[in-house]
Image (cartoon, rainbow, N blue to C red; front, side, top):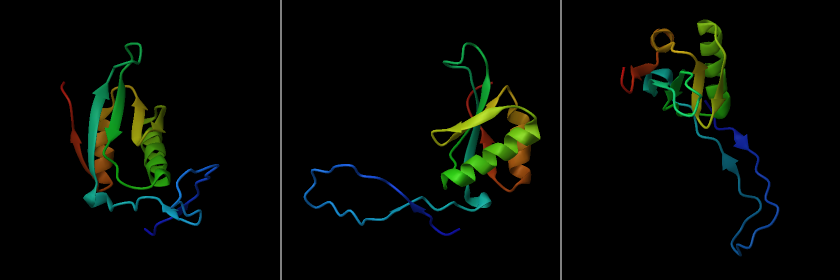
Length: 113
């Protein structure tokens, strides 16, 4: 995929070498077979509720959100995409691993249990 131009707004800069015309680019998304995803169960700071975390995605935020939406709909649960991680409600690690492997991703179960 091509790099997309990402807009950033600078209000004030004290840097004397600052160029206002610099262009910022999002990271290019790797192919599914080149992705190295980790699927783990997390309960920390969630009031005892368990969630499935998918980490390690390399690519644009839009592609990550698309993958998150696909996983949520196929698992039939809620979730969100925050800080480069996909958060799926509940312990659905096996379903997520199967969906990711069927889509061509390299995914591994991470953490204990």
